[in-house]
Length: 336
Image (cartoon, rainbow, N blue to C red; front, side, top):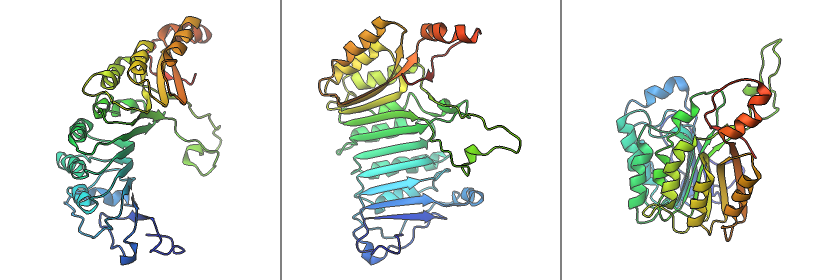
């Protein structure tokens, strides 16, 4: 669980690769562990069979663990695994879920995932990183979050954009995610990030067939069309859901208008960090209005504006150069 060069009594964290859903024993000297990472090392051909029968976590896990990371469980977990894991980890305050189908593929596994959050009443920070789920899962846990005595105050939801997947955004629950916004949030991120690129010849994305020319990789991301922005803007500004002490906000996943940006700024003047995707026009007046809106932030330290060209902007800049006639759906996002 820990490196051989580290005294287990001094270790603060442990990473355990799992080839099944059986958690090994923890030595007595690891009683002071602060963080635990469980990483799936399950063979793909065995994964589905391991999900058929319920699994209960019965091992004693150090109660000192305050941070839990679950990563690479691509097909989810067997029934009862998550809820029983929550029973063994009553004191976790930080949760990171990375690259997985967290709620599984059945109603039973989704209920188990919801039970995990119902039992994990001490979590204050949650990071969903490339986490996908069945429809209505995020809607269901939003109710759980709002009823908690101890609120989740740091919430990050991040997806890595996949250029090769034309339907990628359809798998991201655009209308459900804003339901997680509540009055006691301090930091919120709803973000789509570019995939990491390397020059490593061993990287599969850099491999080419013999005689094939190396093609340049697609760049940039896509954000949701502005028609979907109403959900997140309403959640951020209306009574009953608007955070009262929001300090950091990243909603680059959604394209908003300048008018909607003004609504957000007027509601959250004490923001210290702001990252947004804004529809832009090719005029000096539009730029001046944008700067005037941002002047309303009284304590801001960092701003990132991702410009999404309006239809008019796109037609003036792109279509004459390409000499084509095409429809523009307003979803391509460019840095600007």
